[in-house]
Each structure stands twice: as C-alpha cells, then as structure tokens.
Length: 164
Image (cartoon, rainbow, N blue to C red):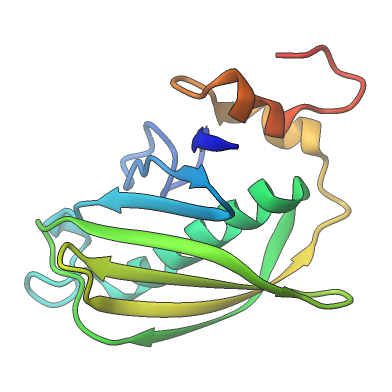
C-alpha cells in the first residue's frame, strides 16, 4: 500500500490550514516520507529552522508511520534527537521514518531529516505507547482526506462504520 496520507485538520505540522507547515506525508513500503521547505518564520538562528520544529517534524513522521503500519493510535512517550547539521530555511529537505522494533508496551521508531543532497541533518528515535483511551472514530473525524486514494483511506476505516 502506498500514497498520500490525510492531514489532521488541527495539527500544526500536517494540518492543511493551521498556519503551520502543511506537510504532505507519503506512505510506502513501511516508510513515511515528506519533502518540505522550511519558511523563515520558523527559524531559530538566522536562516536555520528552530530545533523545536525539527523535533516536531521527526515526531510527526514517526507517529504517522507507526499508525500506517499498525492502524492503532499511539502517543509519544519519549523522543531523542541528534542534530547533525542545520536545517536551512528556504531549501528543500526530506523527513522520513520507519518502525524499528516493538516490545511489550513500547514501539521504537526512527526518523531522519536530510538535505536535498542526502546529507543527514537530524536523526531521532521515538518511543511510543498505545493510547487505548483514544477513540479512532473521534480521531478520523478531524482528518482531511482530499487527495487521498481510496486504498489509503481504508487505513482509517472504523469497524462498524460505513465504508468510505
């Protein structure tokens, strides 16, 4: 299965109209990928994307690959980030993530951000735990499915609800 994932309407990172990054996330072969060009309004030091935004980008791609692979809702338990080189504002970068390992209660996911030449800018390891108290049907109502194929839409089907 591969294609564009929906955006969460209220999310700074993937929401289509929040004033945030409006990322378009793609899923294929157990990996989430998105290309993005950071705007200077999100910089920390002159011309460099703020480190908090870098961490958030990694968290975002890691969460989405985890959902796409498991079809369950998780929350970030812990995240570790290594900053290798600045993420330059105004230039295209790629963020990607893949699930590394699943233990009894925790799933480990790796995310990276690379520049357009493939040089590593940041690397993150996220540790996620399932949120059994979250309701999938409540979550799905906030997704923006514009441009999402029926096949990808099926990842968000709630048992007992009508098919998309």
